[in-house]
Length: 166
Image (tube, rainbow, N blue to C red):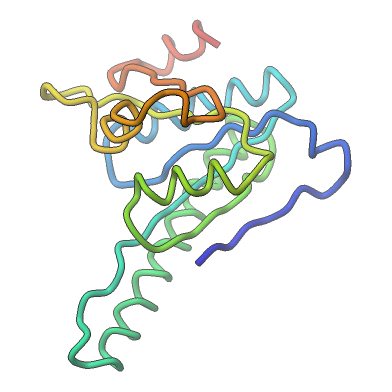
């Protein structure tokens, strides 16, 4: 399941596309701000990926379909919410991807399927010993399997620090 907004013109196909995974983590805002400023400074674009968990209520198909539709609407609303921040920080509309499945697996699949994606930007968890499930999954794969650079920014960065880095 995918919803995307293709580039408007041929010139945009050669732009760097910075992909950010949209979730409910505290670190999302850090990754998004970093990606937006990098896109703005390099003439690139930001893409947002939202992955909804699959419905697991197979005994009642109508209930499963309703749950899936509600989660899709939540995902679309979340992407629209993040779109405003992208417009503010990057000065352009993001590309949207909405999928269903395991977040890390869908991210890897999208990277392989979408040749316009140039960089994946993720923020490491600011708390705990683990950088986060998606980063752990990607680092667990052999790096040879990733066809694009993976940028991991510290989740504790302030807006001022992000501006200074970009």
